[in-house]
Length: 283
Length: 53
Image 1: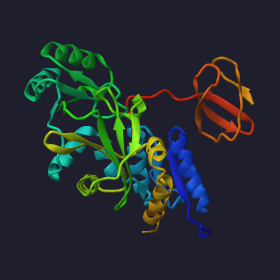
Image 2: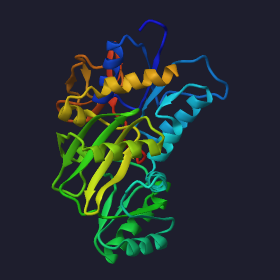
Image 3: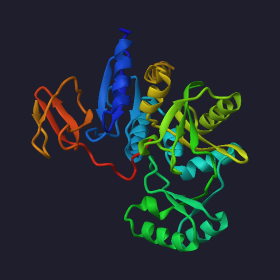
């Protein structure tokens, strides 16, 4: 590609995923403008365009969201768009959105005070799961087995300084097999899917879950497409659990990692992401 | 080649790129490539509460 098209890559750190994206852009002859989320400064007036499209790979939800809003202000499209980052990156907003679209998701209650959180846990029943509204990799998630545990965990969360923990996201514990399913959607295409298996209740690859490729059923593909579309579409990893009442979507990740998925399936996920960015940048 | 800021072990640049995060082969500290020419590293940023996918 030699028509001056440039891909912006907005990052916090460079992991194998970002290296793969740089490699895929290089293979397509697309120059990449590296944008470090700890260096950028945004003014109110539009600068001369630094890139035709910016791919967000910042791992910070806060930085990603404000940066995407700034790029949108300058008229530079981002992958994903700011509204998608905002909703999918916040479990409260994502659950509301899934419910609005009639997509099956675990029973969830949101409380804004410790007292209300304890009542919400009682309403959900035991075991319940308490999750931070923002964050991934199973970090600071708690499985609550009794009222006593709920009191202790809510007390601990209340002691944490971050306002993230002032919102209590309470979810039913879904009795599922020792695995969950991840479907990676890019634009209108499912590019890969995998099973994540763990003996623990958290099946995050970051927590050592093992992965294997999955040929998604038509039902799973359709559900993943619906969940991705509900968020606004783009590059999204849809996490699905097999509950006793059928498939339920518990998360849609707007800045998904794909090293494990890549290793499990061999799919060219970085290439698909770069191709999608080009499509968005040329619209 | 440079030194790990934590344990002073020699760290090779190999084909590392700007911003790349890797573990020091001696002490396991996560390091971030600060520059490639000359090769320089610093401790990688610590995971923050809003970090995720």
